[in-house]
Length: 73
Image 1: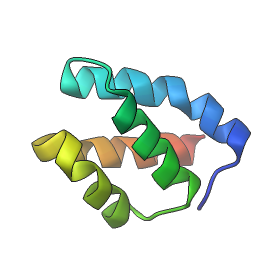
Image 2 (image 1 turned 180 degrees about the vertical axis):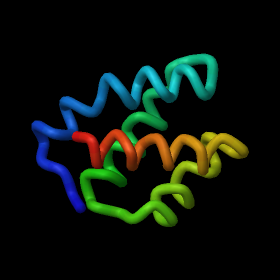
Image 3 (image 1 turned 90 degrees about the vertical axis):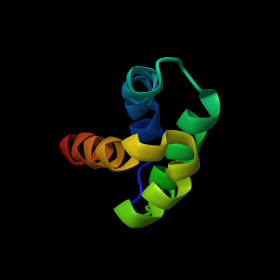
């Protein structure tokens, strides 16, 4: 499911907070990548593939949390 601009704007603070928690610092490139993936309606596997270079071992946990947040929307 792809999200509207408004929905992405509402999700962005959660993404920023979660990326900072996972990485220990805020990385704008990761936030942008997440927003682009979710905005295009990518599935979990594709999102994880895009984020793996940034998040490494934390990727699957982050993607699961992301999709839970999107579904709770």
